[in-house]
Image 1 (cartoon, rainbow, N blue to C red):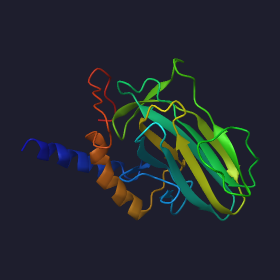
Image 2 (image 1 turned 180 degrees about the vertical axis):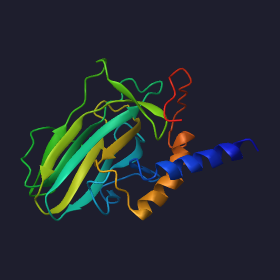
Image 3 (image 1 turned 30 degrees about the vertical axis):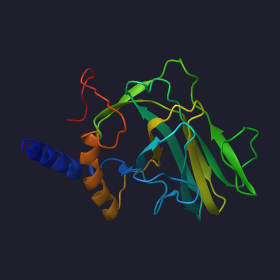
Image 4 (image 1 turned 90 degrees about the horizontal axis):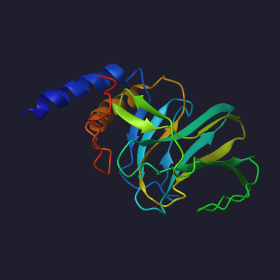
Length: 214
């Protein structure tokens, strides 16, 4: 019975924050090349996809359309959980008009496309951290892609773990805090779940960290 007031409080918090934060999504099914996460609407609108590498060889794929020039902001962060100290996702922005890459990639680039590979730190290197108030969690900061893209067509973002550890990460895409009505509803659904750590696939106690966002 005690859980009901907590869930009610989290729901109210989600409603209050739904117009002020990124729009959260949770990976319920693997984002593959055949079934990627499809970014609908304004690509510049801020989204946080709480995803995970089921295995060390897992590659998650995100897809979106470009019809006019836009600012593409992409990053990756990792929750501060035991065992994730060296979980260091890389990602690649793949689209028409981009240069060819000489990097060896765990996926095939579509014919006529190029890629910008965004690397992370090396294992053992010191990582910056931050507290994300809406989900109420601490994260390791990750690499950033921030460029104008203009070539019309279907674009992709691939995330993978080059060290093949597997684990939870967040794909952060977009920068504008202007959620649509549907996105506000999505926030109201997912924010309480994230507050309760239900998006994670590992035990991640953070009682020893300073709380944020309450």
